[in-house]
Length: 263
Length: 263
Image 1 (cartoon, rainbow over the protein chains, first blue to last red):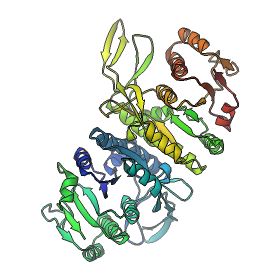
Image 2: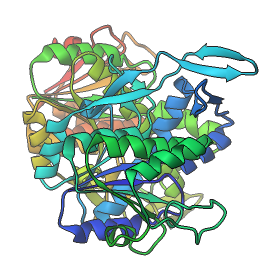
Image 3: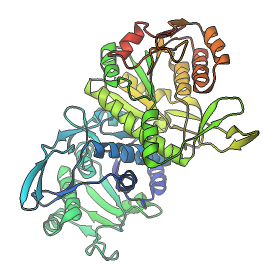
Image 4: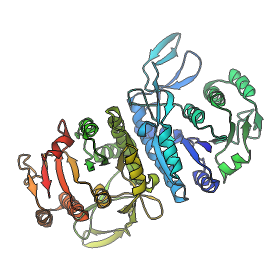
């Protein structure tokens, strides 16, 4: 089995992913983002995204009801179904699900974000949380019947309400349950870059210890990204490939080890 | 089994539907609209809906890529997942699907709309079509595992592309396959009204022949509605209840025969 995380950028070559999946002959779980679609829709609707810096130094997006609605439109609606459409057209029998559907990804709502605002630390109510449980029987049933689940946010909190969650955490949780041989993250870059400004600075191989080391010195979104990778590597032994989603055959290339292989 | 069509208006009491489904102890297929959400979103996005009057006198909404995107946001995203959320919170294990997911509802794209524009009849390209096939094994698998499929548009055309379709046609197709004892249509009125302006004019019982008679004299949206009902009644023998979705217990009341019972 392979778990594929498809990044939320516009230039990810979803048709190529579809072709590769159709040829793969393995079960696959797909988790996708949609931040480009979310941002564009937020812009068109005049909706303002609130980014907080938590007391521990990570950036977090505050999620309220409007955020969840936006997520439902962009992730669960626009992007999820267009991916399902692209997959289906190439013979991959895709079923798109949010965490709400059949409670396929459930979690615990955050008590709130401890946010650094000026010199103060404030607790802000937040409709987001950590995924803690997957509905493994439902996913296995779909996989065994030949379907490819295509998962996205929101997930369900302990009361069944829609909450935002990090896709990286969902992938880590899935990997803890399904123990795929390979997890692939398709992004809009050739891999992890030693120098963010230089696309030729791809780090071809990394050990989990090296990821942890980088995490300490990084900040902002990249720190969060590395944090997600660390969590994934702790969830179960895995070969993680961070690869270019813009290639003609993003998945095939990733499986051949093009990009950053972390093991 | 019961098939429930939940209308796309804001005042349909979805929490009540959820409670009734939880108590029902029968398999259920749910099909829903979302026109209130679609219209509001279209308004916010400044998107203009093109309504054509076909050569045969029915009103049709012309569907282009923007229409499908709007449908993905409003039907597949916002409304589908909020219904799934409401159902799940009351113990109904709902799985929300568009026709694209697992090819659960597939159809044939229209060649175009023969539209009466002034004194001319023009053929307009249209991303919509008639549903012709359901993925019965997928729906049966979900039902047998205790899930309630919650279906909405778009559906997949013969090439797997997203197209718009009438929910009434989807319900008729499902009924042809699943042969539910009762089909319930929950609307924002107490039932079919003899006089649209008078909510006390509910027609308590109708025969299929009477529906056909009404259809001839009606026009616009109502003509289309009656046309859908006729089609449903032809698809398989059924008790059809058109009932008030705004009640505290919309489904229970409908099953008790409150509204318009057509048989």
